[in-house]
Structure formats: structure tokens, C-alpha cells
Length: 323
Image (cartoon, rainbow, N blue to C red):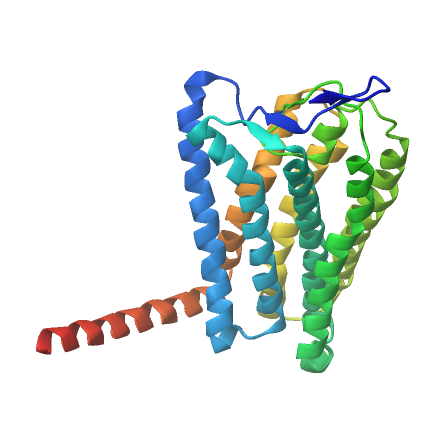
């Protein structure tokens, strides 16, 4: 920490308080977070490997799902690694540059997740409302282009707010009451002028990164539901709804959490940390479970993978025994 000539206090590091300040809860919280984090990595990595190596899952929907898994694993790792290190080493210090990098990466990956869910919504719209032209519209080139746009938008949109925060030179305190560097928590500590950041959060954060993906995600479902209701047979309606139920469940879950985390006013810091923890830990863990438990294709691919491993292991074991 040093003081500039204008009497502004500038910090070269921040202190992360962690998930909880209660000493008795540190070990149980560490074990729980580590367990969920391992499940998150295992579940999303399983989805990613199945999509990559099982030809039955080489379809647009699972291509976008693989992108979602990459985003979930990255987001959990970026936000939880410092919390896990704190529990192991007791070192709660994070450098200013590392704090900004963590804030930027988390915001970017959150934006990317919303955009990729929008692309998946468009994919479900084409599959149900225009099935005869599905493979023509959702070609490999189109899917790759949509995925690239989602990644670029997610990482570009948050650049102006990040640059604005990096220009803050005055902080009243260097203790962040959170388990990672979040933009809102960091902004609460500054005594610099935040009017530009508030304008950017309104235009880019709320409108471009949140409201626009929200509308582009749910508007197609108006046409999807209308098309499903026009299907004469109950079996056909059930099958059509089944193809988009997993995606709709994930979308509703994520937007409810984000609404509680950022939009619903609350004065409790602990409640904000709870919703952040649920967003960064529980949602990435639940996504592969929702898509696997509610999806016959994924479960079939998993069974094929298990059978292949058993055959491969059996042949290897038998060969070694003969030798």
C-alpha cells in the first residue's frame, strides 16, 4: 500500500475474506467446496469427452453443450481456486493485478455462458419449428461461427468496465468481503468516481450481456411452445418438449440465480455471497447432471463408453495374464 501525492490511498494487494469468517466452519466448508468442485470438473469433463469421441453426439446441440462445459469448468476454477488455497495455506492476500484478472475472467465467462445458452435456444427453435431444414441451417460452419461469436462477445463486452475499474486509484479499504474478486464487491471499496462504471454496467452489463441474451433465449420458446401445442398426438408433443426440457431447465435456473444475485435489492453481503457461491459452484455441477439425467442420448453414450472400457480392460487383463 502507498499514498499518492493527492492523499489517495492505493493498494497493491487485497485481502479475500473467504466464504465464511466463522472458524468452526472452515474445514467443513473446504471439504464441501472441494467435493462439489471435483464433481463439477468430473461431470463437465465427462460431457466434453463424450461429445468429442462419441459420433452419436456429433450434433449442433451437443457441440454447444461442450462449449458450455468448458465455460463451467473454467468459471469454477477461476473463482474457487483462491478460496481453496486460502483454506490450505491461510494466505488471503491477492495482488491487485490478479484481482483484476479474476474479475475480468469471471465476468467474461458468465457472459459467454449466457450467449452460448442463447445459441442453444436458437438450435432448439430450428430443430422443432423447422425440422426439415435443420441440418441445412445448423451446418458445421454455422455452429462454429455461433460458438466463436459467443466466446468473442463474452470476452469483449466486459473489457470497458474492466479498464474503468483498473483506473480506480482511490480505495477506502483493501478487504474484500467475498471469496473471489467480483466487480460489485471491488467497486464498493473505491472512493473514485464510479459514474462511468455505473453507466457501463447499465448499458453493457444489464442490456447487452443480460437482457439481450435473455430475450433472444426466451423469445424462441414462444414459437417452440406454439409449435408443440399444434402437434396433434400427445406422444409427439411429449417428444418435442423432451428435446428442449434440459436446456430450458438450465436457462431458468441460471437466470433465477443471476436475478437474485444482481437485480433483487438486498443489504446482506452474506446473501450475495450465497448466491455467488450457488452460481459458481452448484450451477456448473448441476448442468451436466441435468443434461445427462434428462437426456437419453447422453446416457446411451455413457453406457457405450463404460462397455468399451470394460472390453478394453478385459482384453488387456487377459493379455497380461497369458503373458
